[in-house]
Length: 466
Image 1: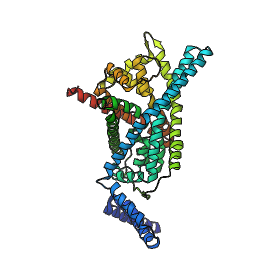
Image 2: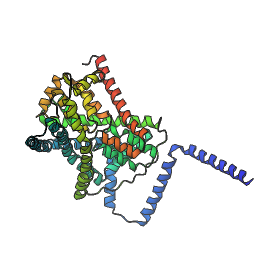
Image 3: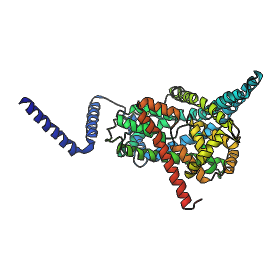
Image 4: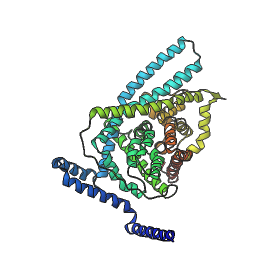
Protein backbone atom coordinates (compact mmCIF):
# COMPACT_ATOMS: atom_id res chain seq x y z
CA UNK A 1 0.00 0.00 0.00
CA UNK A 2 2.80 2.36 0.93
CA UNK A 3 4.58 1.50 -2.32
CA UNK A 4 1.42 2.32 -4.27
CA UNK A 5 1.11 5.71 -2.57
CA UNK A 6 4.80 6.37 -3.19
CA UNK A 7 4.50 5.52 -6.90
CA UNK A 8 1.42 7.72 -7.23
CA UNK A 9 3.15 10.65 -5.51
CA UNK A 10 6.25 10.18 -7.69
CA UNK A 11 4.11 10.08 -10.84
CA UNK A 12 2.29 13.25 -9.78
CA UNK A 13 5.61 14.95 -9.05
CA UNK A 14 6.98 13.99 -12.47
CA UNK A 15 3.80 15.35 -14.06
CA UNK A 16 4.21 18.65 -12.25
CA UNK A 17 7.86 18.84 -13.30
CA UNK A 18 6.85 18.25 -16.92
CA UNK A 19 4.20 20.98 -16.66
CA UNK A 20 6.82 23.38 -15.33
CA UNK A 21 9.20 22.45 -18.16
CA UNK A 22 6.51 23.04 -20.78
CA UNK A 23 5.59 26.34 -19.15
CA UNK A 24 9.10 27.76 -19.24
CA UNK A 25 10.15 26.06 -22.49
CA UNK A 26 13.69 24.92 -23.30
CA UNK A 27 15.26 27.88 -21.51
CA UNK A 28 14.71 26.37 -18.06
CA UNK A 29 18.41 25.78 -17.55
CA UNK A 30 19.21 29.29 -18.73
CA UNK A 31 16.75 30.75 -16.21
CA UNK A 32 18.35 28.82 -13.36
CA UNK A 33 21.86 29.91 -14.36
CA UNK A 34 20.73 33.52 -14.81
CA UNK A 35 19.14 33.57 -11.36
CA UNK A 36 22.25 32.07 -9.75
CA UNK A 37 24.50 34.71 -11.30
CA UNK A 38 22.03 37.49 -10.45
CA UNK A 39 22.09 36.43 -6.79
CA UNK A 40 25.89 36.15 -6.87
CA UNK A 41 26.18 39.64 -8.34
CA UNK A 42 23.81 41.04 -5.72
CA UNK A 43 25.85 39.48 -2.90
CA UNK A 44 29.13 40.68 -4.44
CA UNK A 45 27.86 44.24 -4.84
CA UNK A 46 26.91 44.36 -1.15
CA UNK A 47 30.17 42.96 0.19
CA UNK A 48 32.94 43.73 -2.31
CA UNK A 49 34.34 47.12 -3.23
CA UNK A 50 35.70 47.62 -6.73
CA UNK A 51 37.40 50.25 -8.82
CA UNK A 52 34.58 51.83 -10.77
CA UNK A 53 36.93 53.29 -13.37
CA UNK A 54 38.16 49.88 -14.56
CA UNK A 55 34.70 48.37 -14.28
CA UNK A 56 33.17 51.13 -16.40
CA UNK A 57 35.93 50.79 -18.98
CA UNK A 58 35.34 47.03 -19.26
CA UNK A 59 31.60 47.53 -19.54
CA UNK A 60 31.91 50.16 -22.27
CA UNK A 61 34.32 47.99 -24.25
CA UNK A 62 31.99 45.01 -23.91
CA UNK A 63 29.09 47.13 -25.15
CA UNK A 64 31.01 47.49 -28.41
CA UNK A 65 32.75 44.11 -28.81
CA UNK A 66 29.69 42.03 -27.89
CA UNK A 67 27.02 44.19 -29.51
CA UNK A 68 24.81 42.87 -32.29
CA UNK A 69 25.84 45.78 -34.53
CA UNK A 70 29.62 45.92 -34.07
CA UNK A 71 30.50 42.48 -32.63
CA UNK A 72 30.60 40.49 -35.88
CA UNK A 73 32.28 43.17 -38.06
CA UNK A 74 35.01 43.57 -35.44
CA UNK A 75 35.56 39.81 -35.33
CA UNK A 76 35.92 39.70 -39.12
CA UNK A 77 38.26 42.69 -39.10
CA UNK A 78 40.50 41.12 -36.45
CA UNK A 79 40.55 37.83 -38.39
CA UNK A 80 41.48 39.66 -41.59
CA UNK A 81 44.28 41.59 -39.87
CA UNK A 82 45.72 38.40 -38.33
CA UNK A 83 45.67 36.65 -41.72
CA UNK A 84 47.27 39.68 -43.39
CA UNK A 85 50.05 39.79 -40.79
CA UNK A 86 50.57 36.03 -41.10
CA UNK A 87 50.72 36.07 -44.90
CA UNK A 88 52.86 39.20 -45.18
CA UNK A 89 55.19 38.29 -42.33
CA UNK A 90 55.81 34.64 -43.19
CA UNK A 91 57.07 35.05 -46.76
CA UNK A 92 60.63 36.17 -46.06
CA UNK A 93 61.48 33.88 -43.09
CA UNK A 94 59.87 30.94 -44.86
CA UNK A 95 62.07 31.52 -47.90
CA UNK A 96 65.20 31.90 -45.76
CA UNK A 97 64.43 28.75 -43.81
CA UNK A 98 63.77 26.80 -47.02
CA UNK A 99 67.08 27.97 -48.51
CA UNK A 100 68.97 26.87 -45.39
CA UNK A 101 67.30 23.46 -45.18
CA UNK A 102 67.67 22.74 -48.90
CA UNK A 103 71.32 23.84 -48.80
CA UNK A 104 71.85 21.21 -46.11
CA UNK A 105 70.28 18.73 -48.51
CA UNK A 106 73.28 19.29 -50.78
CA UNK A 107 75.55 18.42 -47.83
CA UNK A 108 73.60 15.19 -47.27
CA UNK A 109 73.86 14.38 -50.97
CA UNK A 110 77.63 14.85 -50.80
CA UNK A 111 77.82 12.45 -47.84
CA UNK A 112 75.80 9.79 -49.69
CA UNK A 113 78.00 10.17 -52.77
CA UNK A 114 81.18 9.92 -50.69
CA UNK A 115 79.89 6.74 -49.05
CA UNK A 116 78.98 5.26 -52.42
CA UNK A 117 75.33 4.77 -51.43
CA UNK A 118 73.00 3.50 -54.17
CA UNK A 119 70.82 6.04 -55.96
CA UNK A 120 67.57 4.53 -54.69
CA UNK A 121 68.68 4.90 -51.06
CA UNK A 122 69.68 8.52 -51.66
CA UNK A 123 66.32 9.10 -53.36
CA UNK A 124 64.20 7.62 -50.56
CA UNK A 125 66.10 9.15 -47.63
CA UNK A 126 67.26 12.51 -49.03
CA UNK A 127 65.04 13.48 -51.97
CA UNK A 128 62.02 11.85 -50.37
CA UNK A 129 62.11 11.76 -46.57
CA UNK A 130 64.43 14.70 -45.82
CA UNK A 131 63.08 16.96 -48.56
CA UNK A 132 59.53 16.28 -47.37
CA UNK A 133 60.50 17.21 -43.83
CA UNK A 134 62.26 20.35 -45.05
CA UNK A 135 59.12 21.38 -46.91
CA UNK A 136 56.89 20.90 -43.88
CA UNK A 137 59.20 22.78 -41.53
CA UNK A 138 59.87 25.70 -43.89
CA UNK A 139 56.20 26.07 -44.81
CA UNK A 140 54.67 25.53 -41.36
CA UNK A 141 57.07 27.11 -38.89
CA UNK A 142 57.08 30.81 -39.96
CA UNK A 143 53.26 31.16 -40.25
CA UNK A 144 52.75 29.35 -36.95
CA UNK A 145 55.41 31.51 -35.30
CA UNK A 146 53.28 34.53 -36.28
CA UNK A 147 49.75 33.17 -36.02
CA UNK A 148 49.99 31.40 -32.65
CA UNK A 149 51.44 34.40 -30.74
CA UNK A 150 48.71 36.63 -32.20
CA UNK A 151 46.07 34.06 -31.25
CA UNK A 152 47.54 33.69 -27.74
CA UNK A 153 47.67 37.48 -27.42
CA UNK A 154 43.91 37.69 -28.06
CA UNK A 155 43.42 34.95 -25.50
CA UNK A 156 45.53 36.77 -22.93
CA UNK A 157 43.74 40.05 -23.56
CA UNK A 158 40.43 38.36 -22.75
CA UNK A 159 38.92 38.76 -26.23
CA UNK A 160 38.37 35.08 -27.18
CA UNK A 161 35.63 34.53 -24.54
CA UNK A 162 33.82 37.49 -26.18
CA UNK A 163 34.00 35.66 -29.52
CA UNK A 164 32.37 32.64 -27.89
CA UNK A 165 29.71 34.89 -26.34
CA UNK A 166 28.93 36.48 -29.73
CA UNK A 167 28.59 33.14 -31.49
CA UNK A 168 26.67 31.34 -28.75
CA UNK A 169 23.31 32.46 -30.15
CA UNK A 170 24.12 31.02 -33.58
CA UNK A 171 25.36 27.76 -32.12
CA UNK A 172 22.18 27.45 -30.05
CA UNK A 173 20.19 27.77 -33.27
CA UNK A 174 22.15 24.72 -34.44
CA UNK A 175 21.56 23.09 -31.01
CA UNK A 176 25.28 23.09 -30.32
CA UNK A 177 27.47 24.75 -27.70
CA UNK A 178 28.91 28.25 -27.93
CA UNK A 179 32.25 26.98 -26.63
CA UNK A 180 32.61 25.27 -30.00
CA UNK A 181 33.75 28.64 -31.34
CA UNK A 182 36.82 28.47 -29.09
CA UNK A 183 37.72 25.03 -30.47
CA UNK A 184 37.25 26.41 -33.98
CA UNK A 185 39.73 29.18 -33.21
CA UNK A 186 42.26 26.53 -32.21
CA UNK A 187 41.57 24.81 -35.54
CA UNK A 188 43.15 27.70 -37.44
CA UNK A 189 46.47 26.54 -36.03
CA UNK A 190 45.96 22.78 -36.01
CA UNK A 191 42.79 20.71 -36.24
CA UNK A 192 44.37 17.96 -34.11
CA UNK A 193 45.04 20.43 -31.29
CA UNK A 194 41.49 21.75 -31.71
CA UNK A 195 40.06 18.23 -31.30
CA UNK A 196 41.87 17.97 -27.97
CA UNK A 197 40.52 21.39 -26.93
CA UNK A 198 36.96 20.05 -27.36
CA UNK A 199 37.35 18.72 -23.82
CA UNK A 200 36.15 22.13 -22.59
CA UNK A 201 32.65 21.19 -23.82
CA UNK A 202 31.00 19.20 -21.02
CA UNK A 203 28.09 17.72 -22.97
CA UNK A 204 29.21 14.48 -24.73
CA UNK A 205 26.73 15.13 -27.57
CA UNK A 206 27.92 18.68 -28.19
CA UNK A 207 31.56 17.64 -27.82
CA UNK A 208 31.06 15.08 -30.60
CA UNK A 209 29.46 17.73 -32.83
CA UNK A 210 32.47 19.98 -32.27
CA UNK A 211 34.87 17.13 -33.08
CA UNK A 212 33.00 16.08 -36.24
CA UNK A 213 32.83 19.63 -37.64
CA UNK A 214 36.19 21.09 -36.64
CA UNK A 215 37.82 20.06 -39.92
CA UNK A 216 35.81 22.74 -41.78
CA UNK A 217 38.12 25.34 -40.23
CA UNK A 218 41.30 25.49 -42.37
CA UNK A 219 44.40 24.61 -40.39
CA UNK A 220 47.83 26.15 -40.76
CA UNK A 221 48.85 23.36 -43.16
CA UNK A 222 46.14 24.25 -45.69
CA UNK A 223 47.00 27.94 -45.80
CA UNK A 224 50.00 27.60 -48.20
CA UNK A 225 47.80 25.99 -50.88
CA UNK A 226 44.96 28.46 -50.33
CA UNK A 227 47.29 31.46 -50.30
CA UNK A 228 49.24 30.45 -53.41
CA UNK A 229 46.12 29.76 -55.50
CA UNK A 230 44.28 32.79 -54.13
CA UNK A 231 47.23 35.02 -54.96
CA UNK A 232 47.59 33.69 -58.53
CA UNK A 233 43.96 33.53 -59.62
CA UNK A 234 42.30 35.97 -57.23
CA UNK A 235 44.80 38.76 -56.65
CA UNK A 236 47.32 38.18 -59.43
CA UNK A 237 46.17 41.15 -61.51
CA UNK A 238 46.74 43.61 -58.63
CA UNK A 239 49.93 45.46 -57.81
CA UNK A 240 52.17 44.03 -55.09
CA UNK A 241 51.05 46.56 -52.46
CA UNK A 242 47.41 45.43 -52.74
CA UNK A 243 48.00 41.76 -53.49
CA UNK A 244 48.58 40.66 -49.88
CA UNK A 245 45.46 42.46 -48.63
CA UNK A 246 43.36 40.99 -51.45
CA UNK A 247 44.67 37.49 -50.72
CA UNK A 248 43.84 37.94 -47.02
CA UNK A 249 40.31 38.97 -48.07
CA UNK A 250 39.95 35.84 -50.22
CA UNK A 251 41.13 33.58 -47.40
CA UNK A 252 38.75 35.33 -44.99
CA UNK A 253 35.89 34.65 -47.42
CA UNK A 254 36.84 30.98 -47.60
CA UNK A 255 36.94 30.81 -43.81
CA UNK A 256 33.42 32.25 -43.67
CA UNK A 257 32.29 29.49 -46.04
CA UNK A 258 33.85 26.94 -43.70
CA UNK A 259 32.08 28.50 -40.70
CA UNK A 260 28.76 28.44 -42.59
CA UNK A 261 29.25 24.75 -43.39
CA UNK A 262 30.07 24.17 -39.70
CA UNK A 263 26.72 25.64 -38.64
CA UNK A 264 24.79 23.71 -41.29
CA UNK A 265 26.42 20.37 -40.43
CA UNK A 266 26.06 21.01 -36.68
CA UNK A 267 22.35 21.67 -37.18
CA UNK A 268 21.97 18.53 -39.31
CA UNK A 269 23.76 16.34 -36.76
CA UNK A 270 21.63 17.79 -33.93
CA UNK A 271 18.50 16.70 -35.78
CA UNK A 272 19.70 13.25 -36.90
CA UNK A 273 22.54 11.21 -35.40
CA UNK A 274 23.09 13.43 -32.35
CA UNK A 275 19.61 14.62 -31.46
CA UNK A 276 19.23 16.84 -28.43
CA UNK A 277 18.80 20.34 -27.11
CA UNK A 278 21.61 22.81 -26.65
CA UNK A 279 22.88 22.93 -23.09
CA UNK A 280 23.28 26.15 -21.18
CA UNK A 281 26.69 27.71 -21.69
CA UNK A 282 28.08 29.10 -18.46
CA UNK A 283 30.92 31.36 -19.56
CA UNK A 284 32.49 33.97 -17.33
CA UNK A 285 33.76 36.97 -19.27
CA UNK A 286 37.09 37.84 -17.66
CA UNK A 287 38.15 41.47 -17.35
CA UNK A 288 40.40 42.85 -20.06
CA UNK A 289 43.97 42.70 -18.94
CA UNK A 290 47.43 43.63 -20.08
CA UNK A 291 49.04 40.60 -21.76
CA UNK A 292 52.15 39.04 -20.26
CA UNK A 293 54.49 38.99 -23.23
CA UNK A 294 56.88 36.34 -21.87
CA UNK A 295 53.96 34.04 -21.06
CA UNK A 296 52.39 34.65 -24.49
CA UNK A 297 55.63 33.81 -26.30
CA UNK A 298 56.23 30.69 -24.20
CA UNK A 299 52.72 29.28 -24.58
CA UNK A 300 52.51 30.09 -28.28
CA UNK A 301 55.96 28.80 -29.23
CA UNK A 302 56.49 25.85 -26.88
CA UNK A 303 52.98 24.61 -26.09
CA UNK A 304 51.52 25.20 -29.54
CA UNK A 305 54.00 25.87 -32.36
CA UNK A 306 56.59 23.24 -31.42
CA UNK A 307 53.90 20.74 -30.36
CA UNK A 308 52.04 21.01 -33.67
CA UNK A 309 55.23 21.03 -35.74
CA UNK A 310 56.54 17.91 -34.05
CA UNK A 311 53.35 15.98 -34.77
CA UNK A 312 53.34 17.16 -38.39
CA UNK A 313 56.97 16.13 -38.88
CA UNK A 314 56.30 12.63 -37.53
CA UNK A 315 53.60 11.92 -40.12
CA UNK A 316 55.25 13.86 -42.98
CA UNK A 317 58.51 11.89 -42.94
CA UNK A 318 57.09 8.63 -44.36
CA UNK A 319 54.91 10.65 -46.76
CA UNK A 320 57.98 12.18 -48.38
CA UNK A 321 59.58 8.77 -48.85
CA UNK A 322 56.34 7.33 -50.30
CA UNK A 323 56.00 10.26 -52.71
CA UNK A 324 59.49 9.63 -54.08
CA UNK A 325 58.78 5.91 -54.48
CA UNK A 326 55.52 6.31 -56.45
CA UNK A 327 57.10 9.02 -58.56
CA UNK A 328 60.13 6.93 -59.52
CA UNK A 329 58.84 3.40 -59.99
CA UNK A 330 57.69 2.99 -63.59
CA UNK A 331 55.15 0.58 -65.01
CA UNK A 332 55.53 0.66 -68.76
CA UNK A 333 56.38 4.18 -69.90
CA UNK A 334 54.79 6.00 -66.93
CA UNK A 335 55.35 6.15 -63.17
CA UNK A 336 52.92 4.73 -60.63
CA UNK A 337 52.04 8.33 -59.81
CA UNK A 338 51.07 9.07 -63.42
CA UNK A 339 49.00 5.86 -63.66
CA UNK A 340 47.19 6.71 -60.43
CA UNK A 341 46.46 10.25 -61.66
CA UNK A 342 45.07 8.88 -64.91
CA UNK A 343 42.79 6.51 -63.00
CA UNK A 344 41.45 9.37 -60.82
CA UNK A 345 41.08 11.88 -63.65
CA UNK A 346 37.47 11.10 -64.74
CA UNK A 347 36.11 11.54 -61.20
CA UNK A 348 38.31 14.58 -60.62
CA UNK A 349 37.08 16.29 -63.81
CA UNK A 350 33.48 16.02 -62.56
CA UNK A 351 34.30 18.14 -59.51
CA UNK A 352 36.40 20.73 -61.36
CA UNK A 353 39.84 19.24 -60.61
CA UNK A 354 42.16 16.89 -62.51
CA UNK A 355 43.69 13.55 -61.58
CA UNK A 356 46.97 15.04 -60.38
CA UNK A 357 45.22 17.51 -58.05
CA UNK A 358 43.07 14.81 -56.47
CA UNK A 359 46.07 12.49 -56.13
CA UNK A 360 48.07 15.27 -54.44
CA UNK A 361 45.34 15.61 -51.81
CA UNK A 362 45.31 11.83 -51.28
CA UNK A 363 49.10 11.64 -50.90
CA UNK A 364 48.88 14.71 -48.65
CA UNK A 365 46.78 12.90 -46.04
CA UNK A 366 49.81 12.61 -43.69
CA UNK A 367 50.31 16.40 -43.78
CA UNK A 368 48.41 19.06 -45.73
CA UNK A 369 51.59 21.08 -46.18
CA UNK A 370 52.92 18.73 -48.86
CA UNK A 371 49.88 18.90 -51.17
CA UNK A 372 51.21 21.76 -53.28
CA UNK A 373 54.80 20.47 -53.68
CA UNK A 374 53.45 17.02 -54.62
CA UNK A 375 51.28 18.67 -57.28
CA UNK A 376 54.21 20.64 -58.66
CA UNK A 377 56.35 17.49 -58.70
CA UNK A 378 53.63 15.59 -60.53
CA UNK A 379 53.18 18.26 -63.20
CA UNK A 380 56.91 18.59 -63.80
CA UNK A 381 57.64 14.83 -63.63
CA UNK A 382 60.66 15.61 -61.49
CA UNK A 383 60.43 12.52 -59.29
CA UNK A 384 60.76 14.49 -56.04
CA UNK A 385 59.09 17.43 -54.32
CA UNK A 386 60.33 20.75 -55.66
CA UNK A 387 59.66 24.45 -55.14
CA UNK A 388 59.49 27.01 -57.92
CA UNK A 389 61.50 30.20 -57.54
CA UNK A 390 58.52 32.59 -57.53
CA UNK A 391 54.75 32.83 -57.82
CA UNK A 392 54.96 33.78 -61.52
CA UNK A 393 56.63 30.47 -62.39
CA UNK A 394 53.92 28.62 -60.49
CA UNK A 395 51.23 30.56 -62.35
CA UNK A 396 52.81 29.67 -65.71
CA UNK A 397 53.01 26.01 -64.73
CA UNK A 398 49.36 25.81 -63.63
CA UNK A 399 48.02 27.67 -66.67
CA UNK A 400 50.04 25.41 -68.99
CA UNK A 401 48.40 22.42 -67.27
CA UNK A 402 44.96 23.76 -68.23
CA UNK A 403 44.03 25.54 -65.00
CA UNK A 404 41.20 28.09 -65.18
CA UNK A 405 39.52 30.19 -62.52
CA UNK A 406 37.06 27.30 -62.06
CA UNK A 407 39.93 24.87 -61.38
CA UNK A 408 41.36 27.31 -58.85
CA UNK A 409 37.99 27.84 -57.13
CA UNK A 410 37.21 24.12 -56.88
CA UNK A 411 40.73 23.35 -55.65
CA UNK A 412 40.43 25.96 -52.89
CA UNK A 413 36.98 24.71 -51.89
CA UNK A 414 38.25 21.13 -51.84
CA UNK A 415 41.28 22.16 -49.76
CA UNK A 416 38.93 23.93 -47.35
CA UNK A 417 36.40 21.12 -46.90
CA UNK A 418 38.18 17.82 -47.61
CA UNK A 419 39.13 14.99 -45.24
CA UNK A 420 41.25 15.60 -42.12
CA UNK A 421 44.96 14.81 -42.06
CA UNK A 422 46.32 11.64 -40.46
CA UNK A 423 47.26 13.39 -37.21
CA UNK A 424 43.73 14.74 -36.81
CA UNK A 425 42.21 11.32 -37.55
CA UNK A 426 44.36 9.66 -34.89
CA UNK A 427 43.53 12.42 -32.41
CA UNK A 428 39.82 12.00 -33.16
CA UNK A 429 40.08 8.27 -32.48
CA UNK A 430 41.81 8.94 -29.16
CA UNK A 431 39.38 11.65 -28.03
CA UNK A 432 36.16 9.97 -29.16
CA UNK A 433 37.23 6.44 -28.28
CA UNK A 434 35.14 5.18 -31.18
CA UNK A 435 36.09 3.91 -34.64
CA UNK A 436 32.54 4.69 -35.81
CA UNK A 437 32.75 8.39 -34.98
CA UNK A 438 36.31 8.56 -36.31
CA UNK A 439 35.15 7.11 -39.63
CA UNK A 440 32.29 9.62 -39.74
CA UNK A 441 34.75 12.46 -38.99
CA UNK A 442 36.67 11.37 -42.10
CA UNK A 443 33.84 10.53 -44.49
CA UNK A 444 31.60 13.50 -43.62
CA UNK A 445 33.92 16.30 -44.84
CA UNK A 446 35.00 14.09 -47.76
CA UNK A 447 31.43 13.74 -48.99
CA UNK A 448 30.68 17.44 -48.47
CA UNK A 449 33.84 18.48 -50.34
CA UNK A 450 32.89 16.31 -53.34
CA UNK A 451 29.26 17.51 -53.33
CA UNK A 452 30.15 21.21 -53.07
CA UNK A 453 32.79 21.04 -55.81
CA UNK A 454 30.47 18.95 -58.01
CA UNK A 455 27.67 21.51 -57.61
CA UNK A 456 29.97 24.45 -58.36
CA UNK A 457 31.72 22.85 -61.35
CA UNK A 458 28.56 21.56 -63.01
CA UNK A 459 26.65 24.80 -62.40
CA UNK A 460 29.40 26.84 -64.04
CA UNK A 461 29.50 24.48 -67.02
CA UNK A 462 25.72 24.27 -67.42
CA UNK A 463 25.31 28.04 -67.43
CA UNK A 464 28.27 28.47 -69.78
CA UNK A 465 30.26 30.70 -67.43
CA UNK A 466 33.52 29.21 -68.64
